[in-house]
Image (cartoon, rainbow, N blue to C red; front, top):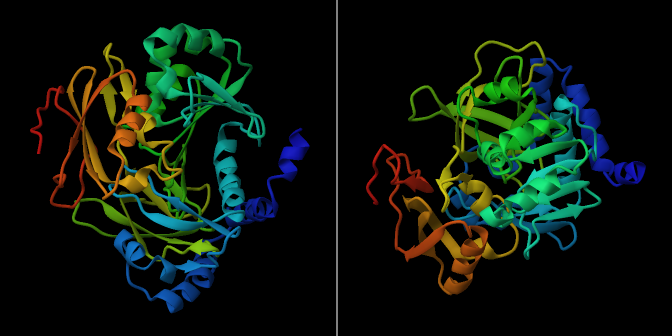
Length: 406
């Protein structure tokens, strides 16, 4: 079965595997030369100005190549940054390319292609607590099904799983340990942890690794597939793969931080050119002996947000609400939203919706995904943003730092 799976990885996977290995030996001049060969044609086609989500919303066709049925399909960003962006992605090569880079990152904790994973997440329909994807060799645990009444079922099941890698969002890591119990977690044959989509609070990753004796593969990427970086345990910073896309760090209004601007190297689908990701980074100081990849000392991207459920447990808001709703048409109904914890076990969901949106469907979806809290819905015309244009998608009015509802 393993050989069959590896054969299905596809030609793009093996092309990028070879490219990744070669790039680890490149000098800074080699990287600059490679970037010029990929970026210069894009500059001639699209110009050299910095682009934003609105540029792609206004004229997606201008930035999209070979957008033909079968060759490309429509995808979208998630909902944490406001109104999702729809764009076109390569149907075949994108998944193969992603696997090449992710498998390289995961190999740092001992992972080999198609080793068994247990993923705490996944948009599982119905009442199933877990589902198995045979071709991926992944067990997915439904966060929505981990209600208090089913935790004994979860604990019994997880105790039967052979050695596995745990795939999780950073904010869900301690939630998962809390759900099954720390004693049971320590007894499980976990081989390592894969965590992305959010940042770890300062020092938390190293503290977890020391406390539990498990290594974490941590990385930074985003839904537009323009740049990708892995966390380096030697320099404690992020290395950006130079063959995945081009990183630029440009001045920002935030002291000590620079804007992450990305250019994708995708040949089919939407081509993001000098694209404003809306994330900030701290420029890498000095060099790391591992390679000459562009570096950042820290990524100031999505922070961890946790709510308290009806029994006071902390749960990852991202994992329950945003992480696996980026497929289908759900987000096409919503322009913006914000969750506000008004009391333990109670969330106010504030929404800006598009004309024709199905309120019943929206409320049913969120209620189904968060059955361990009481939800109240409020439809508004605007959600207040900071002076920098950002808006927090979660406010906790029960914390010691009080907030007023804007």
